[in-house]
Image (cartoon, rainbow, N blue to C red):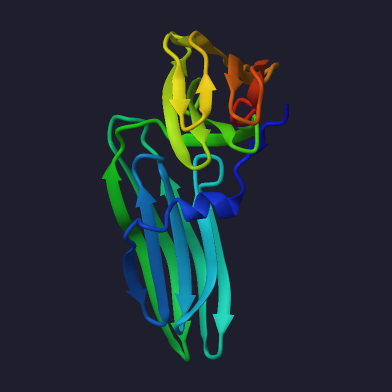
Length: 230
């Protein structure tokens, strides 16, 4: 069973409905779509109306370095995601200089901020159990010691839970059903946190079935990840 990290395009789609904040700096337009529930932001840099840089800022990659040019205009500098745990405000700050012809337009300071009320996402992993049934594990926190887990029937969320360092075993006591997909009672996930010498993983034990899949037992890891910075 192979766990697949969500790709950048999949993650960017999650921000489609997040309203952007725009800041104009001479010929440069900066846009920020911040999702407080993820501790992440998508930033874009548009020069003379042309989008030249776009990136997801996250715990593991918090900086976009700009060095772009178009016609008589340039923009150099950085856009940085600043995370403050769950005790303060997260923000995106800019330290850039845009130029047009002989005129310079500097910007240094905060572009937007938001209350930091939840640990940031540091990894997301999908496993296809069948063509219809999948799992999604969302790892959070600077120590990567929180794992949200969900069953999906296609794109429909069936149920979800969260395992932590201090509550590593989570059990679904009842049957879980969506259409003809059924997961028997007592499915469970177990969290093993990462250390400097070993990876973290989430272990799933469950029995599922559907109209095209006979009762099938699974006992396997559905996500594996490193300690951030290790």
